[in-house]
Length: 101
Image (cartoon, rainbow, N blue to C red; front, side, top):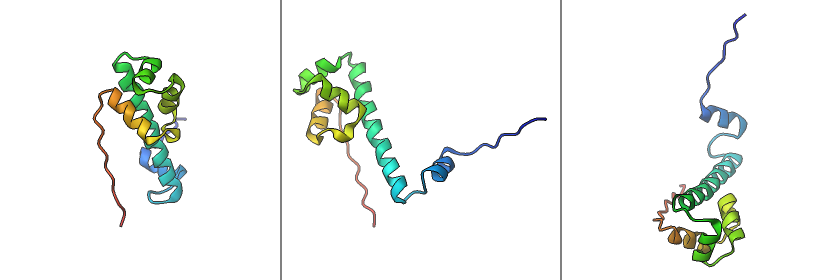
């Protein structure tokens, strides 16, 4: 007997298990995802520049442990420190803020 699998989109799976867009739970999920992506972007930029966490920390003026925390969970970092990290990496930072009506 042949089993048939149903293909579903990632969006529909997220809606089913996390919630629809605009709901409090879904908004929290989206924010966590953005935060994780920011930490990954910092890590990737650091690695592409062949810098260790210690070297980046020295450039920014923070301990290696702080760089590690930022790469793993930006939400616990000071905004000023994150901007200093991007500056040390020579990264251009753009912000897009959308206000809901």
